[in-house]
Image 1 (tube, rainbow, N blue to C red):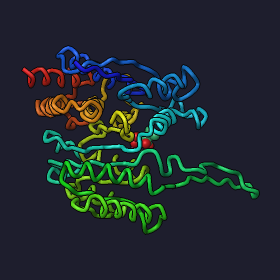
Image 2 (cartoon, rainbow, N blue to C red; image 1 turned 90 degrees about the horizontal axis):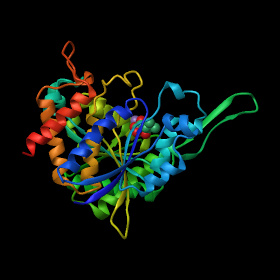
Image 3 (tube, rainbow, N blue to C red; image 1 turned 135 degrees about the vertical axis):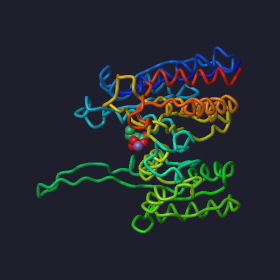
Image 4 (cartoon, helix red, strand yellow; image 1 turned 90 degrees about the vertical axis):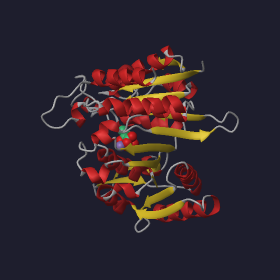
Length: 370
Ligand code: IPM
Ligand code: MN
């Protein structure tokens, strides 16, 4: 049985609660002889700040570098509202993304049939939805310098963020999008704002060049990012793969998440470049939802985005396609059986808690693999 090294970083808020459900799954896959996982657990975000006064320790970074994949819960919360900016909980996540070189963030938005009514949009708009947002994750305004607040001579303060992209950064994320589209419905929609941003002008040019030179067989369309947001809530099924920069991807993926019924449903994979020698990629898997401090510690959180993120690890890091398919079917079946956590329950109906939902997925795994 192949064995893989996993680093678990549960983080803050509901992170530890949803991670516990993945630990149950890891134990299940191990017990079935499907795959062995060696796990280590470390701190990130506010939890790391409380222990070490930094958002992630060098030791945890070293473990992340050595792991075959990192599973990440969530970071942040009101408790850390006043910590120094460079040590805020989110800085731990950004350091992981940057130092592991995780430039490609895949955020699939799938509307499970059982959940079409949980979406705030009409059933016919979201039923059967299956799109992926490919978000550039290590560039753009998140990391561009200068990034500062300075006091001017007249006493005013001025804040600067820098949106910055090079051709190489755009080419490599475009390739990820085209490669993915080839395995899906063969369409890429590239979102930017070339009407107001130089980085948008370059983005559009480079994506077009990569398309013409390497992927002419894939359909490519360009869409302004604001229009893309509007189209996502109007008729999302027109899309297959959407590729965009770091900030637009952050926003558009939250919009896409809600189409599926709840932010609690959306998993994500953050991948680095393939190692030329081993063919391996650095990878981190995390739910798109945040730490949800308002419900943390109460066992109410939906674990499906975290479970789905583990499923993406099975698929993208370990090539365990059958196991990943099985896990996705188990999620579908658990939902089809009528179980709902609070975020996806119809008003006035009974909701189950985090661990009951996790147990239901394992029950379906057992049933499906019998
Ligand atoms: C996300 C989150 C992060 C981001 C935060 C926590 C820094 O919103 O992964 O979408 O903005 O990238
Ligand atoms: Mn976000």
